[in-house]
Amino acid sequence: MKDFFEGIEYLFENILFYPLDALRELELDSWFLANILNWIFVIVGFLAFFYWMKQLKGFNDRNEENRESTSHSFLG
Image 1 (cartoon, rainbow, N blue to C red):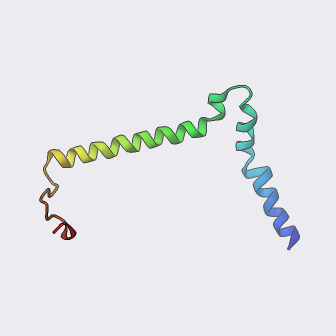
Image 2: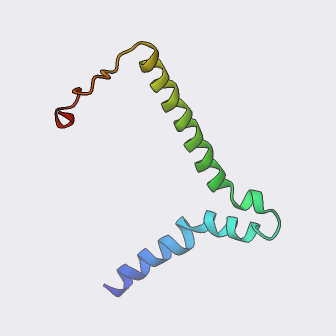
Image 3: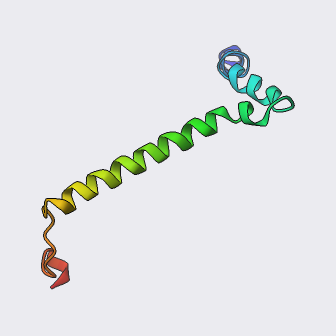
């Protein structure tokens, strides 16, 4: 069993995490390139937020939302 877990350790540390290690070493040269993965996540988050706001505006413009105070049963 020890060889099995050492194999998993080798897979993750030396193969799967190699791109992240390369980004960590790149930090001394360029901070922006070292954080490219974070920038991608931020851009995707902003795009999702703007898409969501566009959809909400479309529903609001078409008056598809029930705005009565009793639209939910718990509101009375």
